[in-house]
Length: 315
Image 1 (cartoon, rainbow, N blue to C red):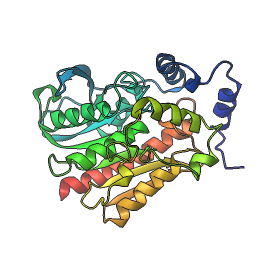
Image 2: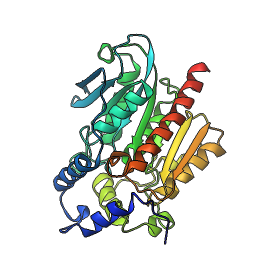
Image 3: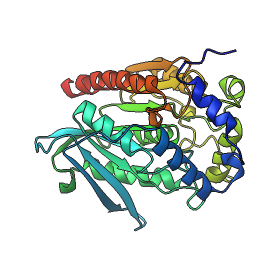
Image 4: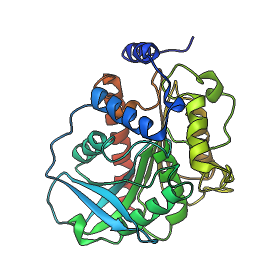
């Protein structure tokens, strides 16, 4: 029996006792509503900030990409911006589900955050989410007036599917725009993953293998699962990538692929901090009221991320 934290046990018991069909047995619309309801019940209140404002930018194909801007202060001095890509398997999740998390990041780091509401599958399949996130990162890096201050560099960050997108954006845009660091929170970086943690934690720990299969079927639908925009772990080399903070959870089906990505970054000479949370579940970063230790995990991550950002800024 794996180690389970004391404050995680009641959440797993509650989830196991829930009646009705599982998320992967319903429609994407039902899944989106279910995720938002769970976060609203189990997440902390949004931290107070100097400014929170909704924006929209045009994508290359003309459709609007909604964004939410978080500013800890109204200082107009040049500063970096963290671009946040939400989790939810490329199918569920949005700006609202990750609102408290993004506000906490902004307040704790004293840093501007831009949350990206990229298009979701199955209405918009791979690689539409990547296209939107690339467009948003380029827009932020260009120091638009809407940000409120000149942008000295960006920090792609995200959880789960958003961690996948942050890794992809870092691979694609390094050298084109200034990326100070990347923060990958229990990322999905290998669409072919099987065995190991994917099998050990396939059922009973919030994220299941069946749910991952459901997500990938909606997102990829016939696309090559080894394409670098889907599985950034398959990059031949990660040399030259931005400094990275990779965070995994001990009870997560995605744990092993996150570990493998961190190891590959180190192997190829990238400044990397790897942090694991024993006894913790996937999705915990947006369940911090119900799982208090997840908030401590977040603060520890933010201390590490600040170190990487400060190192990059001083280089």
